[in-house]
Amino acid sequence: MRKRTLRRACALWLGLLALPALARSTDQAGPPPAQPAATDAAAAQPGMPASEPAIAADAVPATVVVEGRRPGPGVWKVSKGTHVMWVFGTYAPLPQKMQWDASRVERLVAKSDEVLMPPVAKAHIGFFRGLTALPSLIGIKRNPDDAVLHDVVPADVYAHWTTLKAKYIGDDDGVERYRPVFAGEELLLAGLKQSGLAYGSEVLGTIEDIAKKNKVRMSDSGYDVMLDDPRKLVRDFKNSQVDDLVCFTKTLDSLDIDLETMRVRANAWANGDIGQIRGLNFAERRDACLDAILNSSIAKDAAALRQMRERLRLSWLRAAEKALVANASTFAVLEIQDIVGPTSYLAALQAKGYTVESPR
Image (cartoon, rainbow, N blue to C red; front, side, top):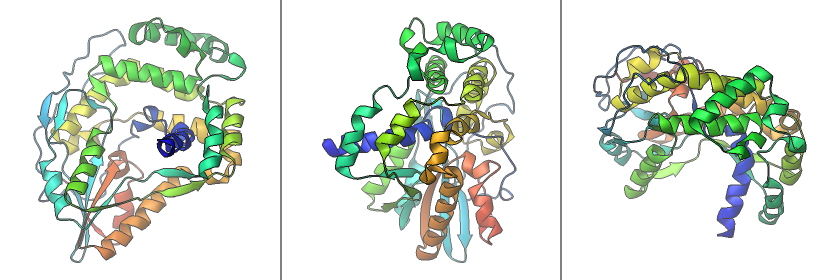
């Protein structure tokens, strides 16, 4: 139990950087890394219409979120010679009442030599040093000097917040003391819940269960973050202002104009409609919210946190190439924006001479 508590404590600071809810929205969709070609796991059901109108915060969403058993997207095939890597793209938020049909993925995992997990940055500190950092985590979401949102955001932005808070959260005054980035996260989660969407790790958890069931080894693809003094890092963060107004504003705007698009994207993933996922405009909230933390003075002073996104990308590419050399068949998991987005990991492999085939 103590080890689990420590792992959670160590992960919390990195959780600030990952921002589980806000950081999951995808970037502007870019061109596919290769011309679509059907693979043996690429069968998909018809998706929703190619585009949906944006809606106001008080309008009734036009798109009905799908329910029941759904196939999810097909897989990308990366190969060189006789060695192949099947790449599956996850997405969040997804429909709350959807059940993912993992049968296609199960067949591919079962015949693979290795499952390459998504890249994450992991904090590694001593056990007892980690325990001493636990008390300093209390109140980490709050504004410095006990300030409230009204004190730290412009009046027009706060008025926008007040309207949306009343709609999605209600009379919870505690969130008023949160930093804008965390207040926005709470608001987004509440808005998604009312719209039939939810963040969660069910899809990734199912893949892990399949790998364990079939005795296929799972490998990390990220890198270790060595924190010399995590307690000081947390304390400095708590006492410093962070320029997260852009993140906060984009989160509010997303509940006005992007909530409907998130429903369409969730349906597209559930129905396996890769073409529609590519054709949708993706919000810029992820970068804005990550930049609020990564560009802060605290992060800049911590060498291990610099260029985290690029380091994760390079770490995955190294792990992928190693697996492609060592294994006849590998199954890999990435967030779907890292497959079809402007910084596509698979496009980088294709540039190195690997053949990349997309599901239809």
